[in-house]
Length: 377
Image (tube, helix red, strand yellow):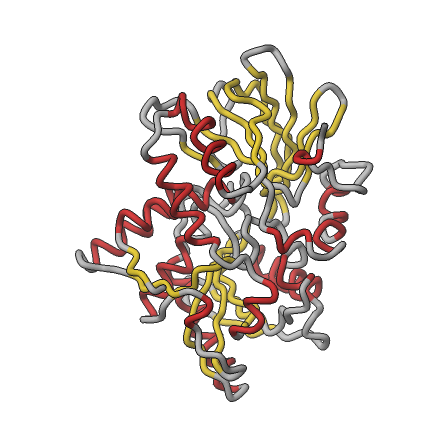
């Protein structure tokens, strides 16, 4: 059922998507800044969101995702407003070139900045958004995603700068998401570690096949819980909510302190290790490459991607705020949680294997099998 998203719903989306971002997808302050930009321009602004079932059922009617691509640390505070709009316009031209019509926008990944960004761009372009997400979480590379593993062509990719420079990149094999990733990363570095990107034109059938249908509603409901629950009770309330949804959820650390952060920014990625000491004395290391990839304690890995590894800032009594790796700092009071990702990640073996290269580059040795925290005895 179609619904109008206004300030309250949009704010909930920012916090909910930041939680599902699992350390990546941009900072919540970026999403909140986009909301403020909307309402400064139009005090009555709203965005129409529709279910996938309400899309026109024709291969000639398509949607696109749009996102910011780059180093979260290098681009912290940047909202990518012009880049995202330019990318959608570029994809609209590409659709017309193919004899198709671009009528919808969807979120390519969850994250405090990267989920609100397509909503803002859709509003600026006068297009509705879909109640879905391309991944149901944040991902570090184009090839670590639901859409490519389910056979959705990545190419053509539209890359857009703030100044309006737009590049349409096409690989010889439309499924060559690795090739698209290389092109996008090179352009990202050329434009100060950040660009707007549109990709994965999809029709209704493809969304039902591959994307995380209903994820936007899930983000709204999760954001509502966080915004209306004192930080001391946030983990308990999330546990109750996810239990009702039959989504496995667990707090590795209900409350603790970040004692060390090692981070390097290069090639459009932030790679590093966050060390957390729980209040009961346990030591946990969260290894990330933009997104949190795996957690180790006492020499053992307790969870890996595609599970969603999130940190909640507990410093404010009013609410626990999900934070990205661009927002963490030594001394910060946090909770460390893990949530099972959207079911589409577990349809195919590639839902695990697409992470192998990223895990290895982040220092993980035994990439198979994935540590499924919800299956532990």
